[in-house]
Image (cartoon, rainbow, N blue to C red; front, side, top):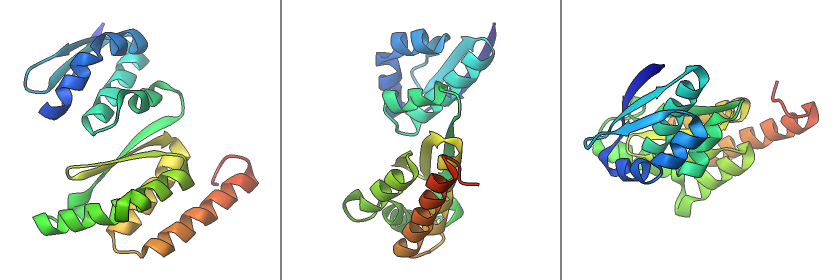
Length: 172
């Protein structure tokens, strides 16, 4: 039996506490939740690895159902640090807005074109999806954060999606 420790934001601790039994059952680990967001996981091998990713995703703002996708083979969690593109409070707000778009449309379009789930929370953009899909979504988010026009990013995603369909499920 091995142990792993991680910390999640205090506002997300309640969800882990509420879903603790389900998470332990589905992930095959023991979970201890501290009052300040510290999480202790005990388990073996891949179960411990999956549990760490699922708890990390919950801490990044995903709901439990979406986070549990990470226990499936081939699914990945990608985290983009918005502060790499601007550190001021105004810059962070503007950059989050670029990824989310008006009424959430940009985020929705990226999710739709890449078959991923995206959560913009605090200073990060987190992505859950199959490995190739998550990497393409990450590239799209990074392009938006870097200043690319939305239309250009969406064309890039549509081209990748067409290529994926032609190649039978992979982008390469």
